[in-house]
Amino acid sequence: MKKAIVTGGAGFIGSHMVDLLLKKGFSVIVLDNFSGGHKKNIKHHVNNKRLKIIKLDIRNLKTNENFFKKIDYVFHFAGIGDIVPSIEKPSEYMDVNVQGTVKVLEASRLNNVKKFVYAASASCYGLNAKKINEKEKIRLEHPYALSKYLGEMAVLHWNKVYNLPINVIRIFNAYGPRVRTTGAYGAVFGVFFKQKLSRKPLTIVGNGKQTRDFIFVTDVVEAFFKAAKTNSVGEIFNLGNGKPIQIKYLANLIGGKKIFLPDRPGEPRKSEANIKKIRSKLNWYPKVNFDDGVKIMLQNINDWKKAPLWTKKKIKIATRKWFKILK
Image (cartoon, rainbow, N blue to C red; front, side, top):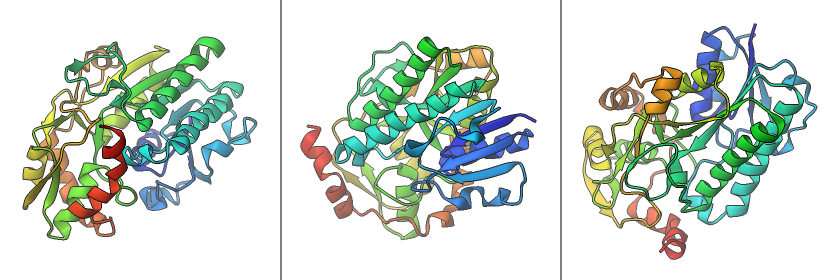
């Protein structure tokens, strides 16, 4: 039986990775400190003897942990994912997303893990308005982007220096069931769904014509699995749908009144992934179209009942330092 470790395995994407691995017959170890992830995301597997859950902050991971022995794949999702708060807490982002990643890399290296797949971020491309391929210039606009990119550099370095078999996937805009419902101001789906449940207007940044390359979470984890199985090593892959969607279009699918907020500096007007490489090298392609993905989420909209309600005033307070620093 093959074995895998999923860091951040109780989080949004990580919990779907756990679903896929168990479905494929793997024995799975989840590492999560539950600061962002929730046990409810994997509670449907609670009686599965092939799943082991370890509460652990990756910064406290020891390289000689027994549970890293004889592991085939490590899928590294653990980290801080909220973008806006990174302006206020840059050192914490560096600590978790960079030093935490190094801890996982070292445990993987010293225990001869067969493949390490890193969840990188397309935020490394910054304000680039072109259709982006993997060789595009790196433009880091905020500490979150910096921390994820430095983590990526560490992963590539461990491959070059220590010959650790790795692949890197730069995720564009992942969405789907279990996307974060609590915490800091951030993910557009969580913000919009709570506003709809509360019969409040949807808060659209700018004119709503900015685009994001949304990719459904089950398509995301299929790509990660293929990146682990492939014989290719040391590769960087863009992961998106390749079909950018306007935020205003998303708001129209959800329905309800809308209000418009000032544009935020440091955020791209357009985000579009060139996915030729991942399609050709991994034989991967997105299966869930955007409209269907949103419908699936709306069927579970009550999951956002306990999410924070972000009003125009609260958003202004939450992004005050963002506007002050990123001019």
